[in-house]
Image 1 (cartoon, protein in one colour):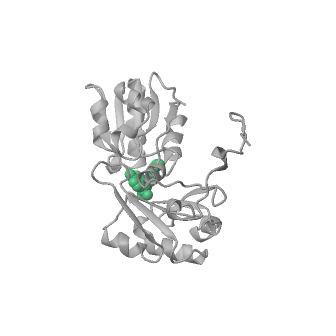
Image 2: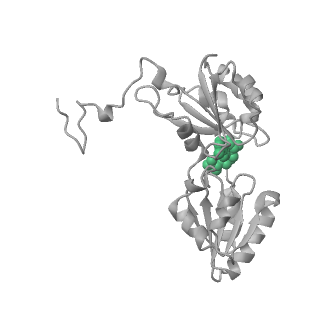
Image 3: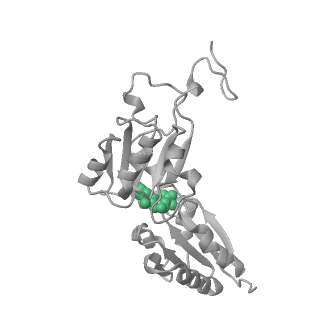
Length: 263
Ligand code: SAH
C-alpha cells in the first residue's frame, strides 16, 4: 500500500443549488482548495469563484469513476487541500463509498463535510413540514427503481405502506410508476403531492402541487425532468386542514427539560 504524502481529500456537500446554501465549513474549504473536482451536472459553477486563483478545477460530469479516482489521487499526492464537491449531502446517492474506497486503499485520508440535501431544500421551498405530531413522525428517503435496481423489500409500494412521509429522489421522470406503487400501497387519488424542481436555484425553482391522480399530467405539462424532488405524505398541506395538530412541545401544559408547564 502506498502512503499519502501530504494531501487530504475533503468530500464536500455543496447543498441543493443556491451557492449560499453550502455550509460555512464547505465554503472555507473551497477558499483554500488546491484542487476541486466538482459534479458539474448538479453543482453550480459559481462555487468555483470562491476558490483561489491557483486552484486546479475539473468537472466530473463526463468522467467515469476510475477517471475521477485517478484525478483525485494524482492531486492528493502533490497538493494539500483536494475537494470533491457534490450536490446536496454526500451521503445520499452520491457514490461516496465507490469513490472513497479505492482512494483509502491508497492511504488517502478522507473527511466528509455534510450538505443541505435537496429533500430539505424542497420542503423549505414549499414551507412544508415533513413531520406532524400524531400524524407522521417518520421520513423515508428513497427512490423508485430505474436503471439502478432496488432491493425487493425496498420497493416503493412496501415503503409507502407505512403511511409515513416519502421524499423520493431520482424519480421525477418516473411519476406514473411512483403513482402506481402508491396506489398499490393504499394511498388515495386525492393524496396531496409536492414536486419541487431545482429547489433553491435562483430563478429556476418550480413548485408543483397536485394530487396523486393528476401529478403525472402536471409534471408533464411543466416539463419536469431531472433535478426534481417528489414529496408525498400525510403532513403535506397541513396548514390548510382544519384538524391541524400543534406540536406538544410548545403546548402550555407540556413540561420539559427547559420549561415548566404553567397548568
Ligand atoms: N446528494 C443529493 C442527491 C443526489 S441524487 C442530495 O442530498 O440532495 C440527484 C437527485 O437529487 C435528483 O434526481 C433529484 O431527485 C434530487 N435533487 C438534487 N438537487 C435537487 C434540487 N435542487 N431540487 C430538487 N431535487 C433535487
